[in-house]
Image (cartoon, rainbow over all chains, first blue to last red; front, side, top):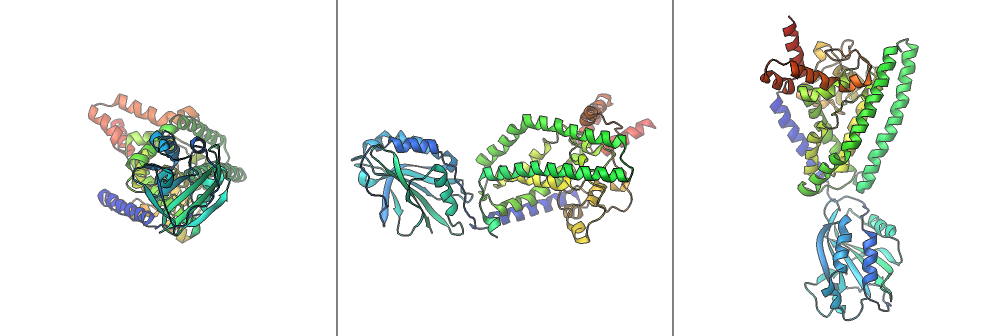
Length: 191
Length: 296
């Protein structure tokens, strides 16, 4: 085989195996997502204080408003920082919030990127831009209400059934009087 | 199937790569000791064999020192390319790793063929070939720029969407597989294996200076690339190892820098600029033949 034919054949082989990798489907199991624990803690500490009695999310839909960005998941700390510094959002709070929601949707095939929203339920806001609706009709609880370490939270992603198409992953952080997270729930919804 | 679809974090893949790299070296040392004992029994364990083997591991040490300096830049180029220019997102799972290994093996074939076909690449790769012996320690006989050329042949995989750590893992798998091929202990493996995979027999041919074996069997894991592209030769007669001109030294420094010293010497003595260019871009066989003509 001459050099040109050999190179041409090689290109075809590369495309073939790349195609196999590309169209392997969504049959993946779990992946630990590299969150930035320190920044999350800052965020949880910063939100205002209120007595928190509710520890389950509402059964139907939730509309949240806050900061939203498509980011590599390991950069989520930057989004928390943005959320913390969003004074307009915090000033719009009718009273100190009970929960902070973190929504991961439109996850990339390699689960390295997602559209992430960090925000409050719009019920607790006097004004807001572009609320994001979360359909909570069908979801699976990955972590029940409890206090978790960051490692436990990230390990929860390993419980996702990646053979199904993931619609979103939702973290719900409940806050105590001092604004610290008292408990967290993690949910996954499939398409 | 679950093993193929289970997702890994980049750190897990990095850990797997480091684990393979480190532990395989331990295994290789063990196999090398077995080989040495075999040569002792056969009364072929000579002073030159010992010196050559020591030189091989010293070149490995020098190579590791260079890699330690350039590794961050090398990895950075892959990560930057992947983060900014990849055209797809491929999951970090076993299936992607398998596909990447096949493509990386093909990329290795072309890189290896490239190194044999131009003076600049050969100047580093000749170090690996310059030993007159053939054992596992030869697999660790590296040249100073052995880290440089893989960059160009494997970087496109990052563009395709393979995570850099998967690419590095695939490169390691290809390298580790080949390490085991550097032995005279195993003659021939069963025919189906010889037909598909690179084997000690095929790789002995690659290291040969026998005329009919020159520039043959570039494969890493799959010998089918050579069979497809017309660069395959079967081991039919005893092999003599080494390079022309012969190095005749077990001095590690001389071994490590011999390729580029020879190239610089040839460039210095070249009659014309055109000849100098040819020394860089044409195959080392051309340079050798030209020198033989001039001697006549």
